[in-house]
Image (cartoon, rainbow, N blue to C red; front, top):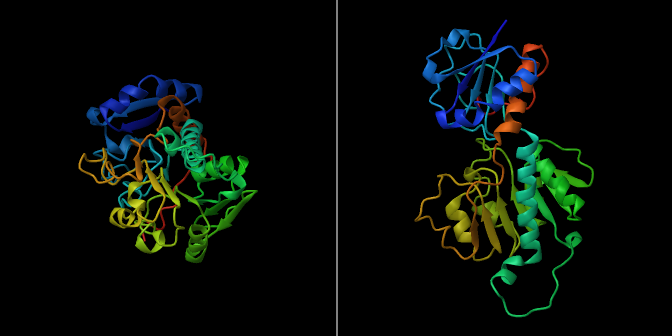
Amino acid sequence: MTTRILFAASSESWENYAQVLPAALEAAGVDHEILQLSDAPDPATVDWVIYAPSSPLQDFTPYTRLKGVLNLWAGVENVEGNRTLTAPLARMVDPDLTQGMVEWVTGHVLRHHLGMDAHIHGAPWDPTPPPLTRDRPVAMLGMGVLGTACAKALRDLGFPVTGWSRSVKDVPGVRSLTDEDGLRVALEGADIVVLLTPHTRSTENLMNAERLSLMRDGAVLLNPGRGALIDDAALLAALPRLGHATLDAFRVEPLPEDAPYWSHPKVTVTPHIASTTRPASAARTLAENIRRGEAGEPLLHLVDRSEALA
């Protein structure tokens, strides 16, 4: 029986997937038909929805045969709380996306660890060496697939890494903390803090004035996660005491030209490039989950929506 798949994203996104997605489904052995919203398909005949958070599809009620929604992006905050969606929801996790995040986080942690900005901008001659990685503690807030991969990479470079997450994670060589007390310990003990938690009700403004005050004087904050994890006004107020903030995600994107982050001497803005979905590898992830679902196997990367729907 042919599996009917609705690609519920923009026409521009479809151009990127028009070749690689059918090829990936064929390689996975899935007999398929791919539809787009512009085709006005009968919702009751759709088995799977490949979804972009910017999609106009918001009411899943008519999709009575739906077996799952597969997100095109890592972030699911724009769909996880949708009460019309009762089918399983899977986030995008694929090796290239993970590798991109590891490279961004590792690069910017090393940049701040080594003090490269001062050298690039021609600071006066100062032969004082930076500490070795073993003396530069890092806190990884969020230990999902991306956070764990980044924590392992930093651990392998010699950084003492503390991971903070909703549940204890067993990652050799990485200290695992949970709850509010664990967050306090992680923030107070780190020279560099990396934000990679998902955006949920409990992580909205995770880095507020109180938690920013726990960070050490001169500490660095990296946010390659979600813009809403940071209370922007609180961060701007804390920056005179902190060392730097390197930010890749923002509440409004592209970041408005008049946003104070652009001109702040202690802020580096990167244009949401830390972890970009690459169609060829993402298509293989999508195809594998559809294959698993059609075979009655457990789906990969399912989202726990209990908090969002509480």
